[in-house]
Length: 94
Image (cartoon, rainbow, N blue to C red):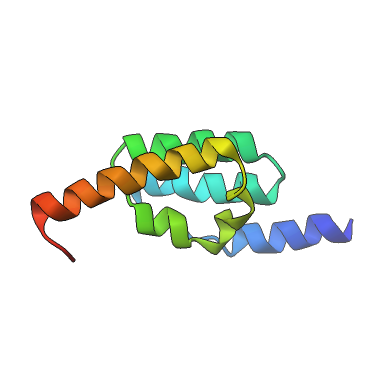
């Protein structure tokens, strides 16, 4: 029961910004906490395809760290990193 309370407390501290892309990103973080990494990765892929292809955000999000050794996550991150580099070339460094 104590673990459930910890997960609940961590989940309620997750604050989405707005819009479906941020909601998908936040839901992915919640699924990581719930021990559902495959669903989390699907939601991250959805967020990136709907307008949040932000490699640094996904890479630096501490809530996603436990996904770092999963091949599906690594594949997604490789795609996002490649796209991010292209965006920086096309639109300039920020």
